Amino acid sequence: MAEAKPIASLEFEKPLAELEKRIDELRKLSGKQKLGAELEISALQKKWSVARKEVYGNLTPWQRIQIVRHPQRPYLLDYLRQGATELFELGGDRAFGEDRALIGGFATFDQQRVVFLGHQKGRDTKENLMRNFGCAHPEGYRKALRLMRLADRFRLPIITFIDTPGAFPGVASEERHVAEAIAVNIREMFNLHVPVIAVVIGEGGSGGALGIGVANRVLILENAYYSVISPEGCASILWKDRAFAPQAAEALRISSQDLLELGLVDEIIPEPMGGAHRDWNTTITTTMDRIRHHLADLMKLPAARLIETRHARFRAIGTVLEN
Image (cartoon, rainbow, N blue to C red; front, side):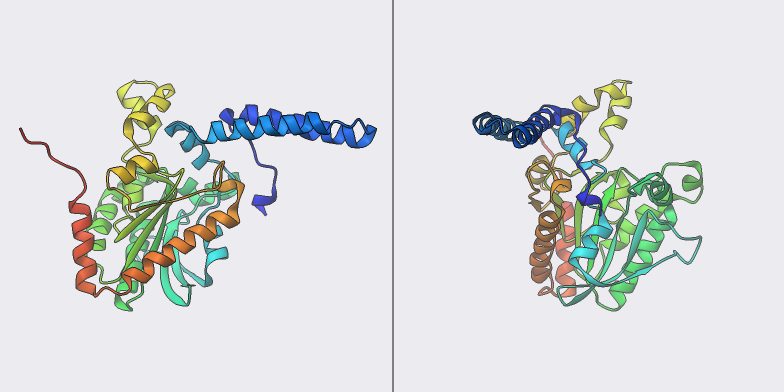
């Protein structure tokens, strides 16, 4: 399994990785030659613990984005395989074709049958090409709409998992009207008669995220982001240079804490220190527990109230200052 592989270090984690390497080498050498280096190992471990708290306790928005893009981070199917049962995926938009970047179907979650939707990325080059790096075409959003209407008809709650840098911006995608497909989804999601919970588990990029993001509750993992544009795209427009992506990430206020303060999300789901990729089990268990909590609340509400609160939630976003 992917989580069992050695975890690749990010650039800002290199000092920690070097300390870990020194500790491991000293342990091996001490064990072989009986050097009695316990005191030195203990000192290095204390140094590593202090450095670890300092690094992960003061993460910048750009460092969080690096964490959320880590290739060993759990993706949608990992959450479903551990946190749900009786998975049954449905394909096709009944108009053009199948999109493997945005998947959906039925699942049983905590004895409740639900419809799930979400972006799926790949683990290697071959799978990433099949999944289009998590960037859905218009048929992906039309498939999502088909499944949401199915959920509405049979009164099944909808849980969406957002993890995309954005909808696919290629010529073919534009020819098949990706903006229209996303716009229709946004409109139709406001009037669903069933509970809708959206969870940003990774990247929440622009309309690609909003196409399945109009929900009664929006949750976000601690290091995930939700933004109208990627930091690189913003830097290319404002500074004419993608190298300014760290400054753009800061200016966009796309971190989970900023989003909570702005009222764009309802809850931050904590991640293990260092990111979700360092402990899949804890991350997935915590995420599913929070979904369960919110789903239990929403299931008590009548359809009219669900629609009303969904409208009110999005109308409350943003403020206007008048002199």
